[in-house]
Image (cartoon, rainbow, N blue to C red):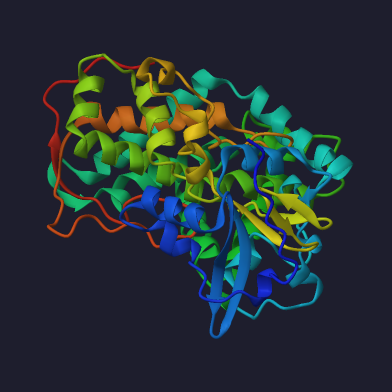
Length: 427
C-alpha cells in the first residue's frame, strides 16, 4: 500500500520539545521496544534530541526504516555529508562544548568523511588503495600478537572489567598497528581518541592537537623510510595535496576503531558469555565465529546510530515526513537492522544474511569492513581460546554505555584464568 504522507507545514524540527534523546534510546534496557515505540508515534522518520547542552537542545531526524536509511545513504544529491549544509552550523546555533561538533564541525576537515562529490572521491581513493594493499595474513598475525600481549598483561587469573582490560585495547591497538604505530604510541593515541569521542571543550581541543602532532610526525617518517602500513601507503599517494589531508584521513579509521571495534568486540564477547544458546552453537560448530559476529550485527548492532550525520540540501519528503532544508538526519543502524521488512519468518533465510547496514551502503560505505571483521574475529577468538572467563551480572543487570552512537555494556565484570587447553583456530 502507498505510504500515508504526513505534510504538516507547521511542524518545524526546531520547534518540537520533549524529544527522546539518542543516548536514552541507545542505552535503553530494551532498545528494540524503544525504537518500536518511536516508530509507532512518528513513523519511519522521527524527531529526536541529538544532544543537549544547558538549555539548548540540538534536534535531528532519526531515520528508523531500512528502506529510508538506504535511500539517505545512497542519495548524495539530496543528503549531504558536508556539515556546512547544516543550518545549525550556518546560523552558528551550536552552543560551546557540544560533542556533536566533533563529527559535524562548522568547517569540514580535509577527509572524505566530511565531503561529497569529486572531493569525496579524491580523498577517499587513497584510503581505499592503502587498505587494498594490506597483507591480510600480516594483519592477522599482528592482531594475534597484540591480543596475546594484552592477555599476558592480565596475568594467569584474577577479576577485572573486561571492556577496559581487553575489548577496548584489542580493537583500538589493532587499528593503530595497521596505521604503523608501535604499542606504546598506540596507547597514548587510545587515551586521546577516547577524549575526542566523549570529552568536551578544551579537553577535546588539546587531545585533537596531540593526535594531529603524532600523526604528522609519523607521516614524515614513513615518507622518508617507507613501510607496509596504511600511513606509509597514504604518505606517497598522489591524490593528497598536503600532509594535513593525510592526517585527517588517518584519523577517521582510528576514531572508528575507538568506538566501533570496541563495541563489536564487546558485544560479541558479551553475547557468547551470556547467551548459552549462542555459546553452545559456537562451541558445537553449528555456527562459526564469523557467523556469530554477523549475528551480533543483526541482534545488537554495535553502531546504534551512525555519527556520520546527513543534512538535507533542500526540502525533501522522507518516510512520509517533510524534512526541511538544512535539517540534520541521524541514521539508526540498529533500528534499520531490526526492521521486519528485511527479516523472514523462516530462520533458514537468515543464514549468512548480510543485508544489515552496519557497514552502511552507497558512496560513503565503511572502507574497512574486511579489516574490521578480521580484527574483531581474531580478538574474540584469542580471548575465548586462551582464557576461561565467567561473566558476573549484578541483579540489576549490566549497564549500557551512555553513548548516542554505540551500544555495548559499559562494564563486564568477570573472573578469569588461563585456559589449560587451546581449541582449534577459526581462521
